[in-house]
Image (cartoon, rainbow, N blue to C red; front, side, top):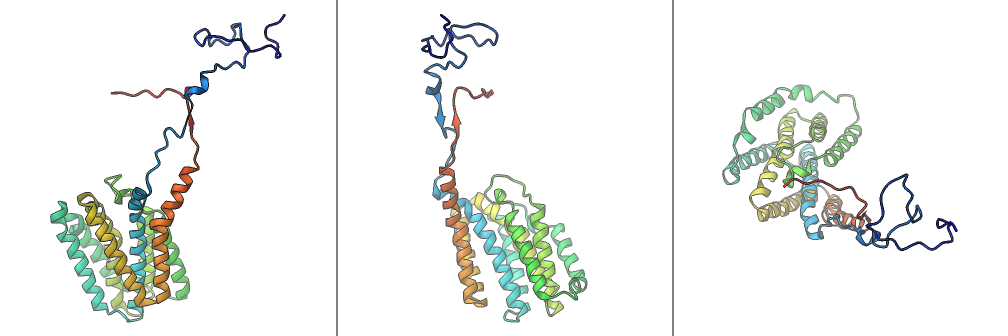
Length: 290
């Protein structure tokens, strides 16, 4: 009687008896699997699910960037409507730049990070190009400019280097993000009613979108509590600017911040719980050097 018929019971074979040779006749069927084979199966063994508290802390970088973009948009609209004076924007530029410079002492970083020759060249170039910037979008409808700048700000938020803010890397990347926000600031400044408004607003965008991420990176390295306090102050300041502009705009801002700070991490945690990763003895061995 042929021992390899399908109606014959699977023989009990010691796992040490099986030889993994393709063309060698062995006393068990080809589809034989030992009882111990699935004992080593693990589900989501390598899946590292962070608690909600840690995810919310890391999502502060996203909420801060959304707040920074909305704050700049509010300041731009308030200045364009002459609800905020140009002198006030100049004062804000000087205060923010001075704060970045003075923060170098407690954060133990070089002052040239904020106020080196590179900064002088950038601000000097913007000052010299004010007449050109004012005529870039001549002949275009303001609504088209607002739509274009909104799309560019969204690109900036989507491609921003949040890993740098959360100290996963030490060098900031994201050329597309910076180019998008700089272009958005320039096209917005080109529709301002007065040339005197162009330079302070573009300077403000440079401080908020180029120097501010460096400050946040080193602040988180220095103190998590100060980083959290900075986030609260930023949210309050942005809400005040939104409320000055429109009550409904402030409601939209609160919705965006809550979405980025809590709803988004909660949804991400829910998706992670649905993930299934199966691993076991069949996985390839990974060599390690010690």
